[in-house]
Length: 255
Ligand code: ADE
Image (cartoon, rainbow, N blue to C red; front, side):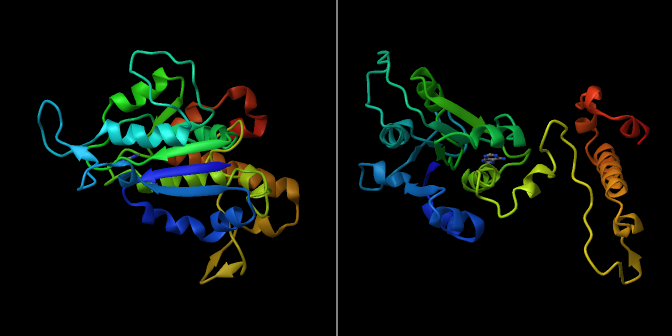
């Protein structure tokens, strides 16, 4: 998978060379490049923003600078606004935005099957609204996502979050692929994961659930499933409401 990230703070993405993401790059599973948006400016101050049309606080990122950069990364020529040129790009353009739909595990799974992702990090009051509109008009698959109901200083942290959620799903990324299958939000039924315990069996007077030490795999599975259902209904009742009843077994219904 090829990943291009555009930001006015490309240094943010040095951390992507660490840990499993770093290893995946070393092994050629991923090719990540962080670009400095200011490289596509032409003025002496390398300006990327301007005052909002209609007034108001803050600054808005200029569409011309973004478009020069994105045209190049998408491998598209600049064309007059009104001309349909039939050119398209196989890359998906992802724009983090606090006012967009929430990014979910389903989106991460879908995007993990793509060959080329381009992330554009907004700063200040964000990017000009015509930018996503323009690229959609040119048949680019543009996705805008929020990572949560809070406002960050820019899209950089949101990109790190989405990137990690997507790339860990790539075949060969995780040492033990089973750990993905059992996780929260994965699979047909999106439940929070059951709680986990390690040794010792009793720690500071607190016991790990004895059934987990019983060696009876069916009982362990049942206990974990019940724990997942109980935690989900307490913490995220919305996920329980979204469950398909046909996927629940008889024992689930009692929980
Ligand atoms: N930029 C600022 N806040 C954000 C959020 N919550 N999600 C995505 N991008 C953002």
